[in-house]
Image (cartoon, rainbow, N blue to C red):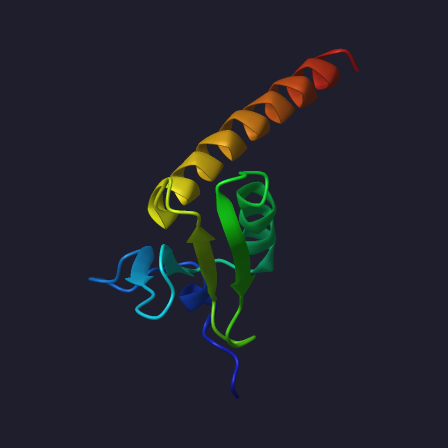
Length: 112
């Protein structure tokens, strides 16, 4: 069967980094982040947050193969910040957003 073993969906192989970065040699201020053990859920959230930044010219993601648990996030900036900085800023904004969502949920759950 082609499906991966269940543990492969959640366990990063020893010696493999969760996130890898490759600078684009053809496009200035661009690069691709490969994020292992993630799927469309995280890819789309990151892409949408990146596009909120005016310094980001392009943000897109793809899941190269449905049986591989990884996504590739491509980022191009205008040069004011690096793709790495753009990603880190977006992740920090998402962290704040999700913390607010968690706080609201917990507040509402207590009132039930």
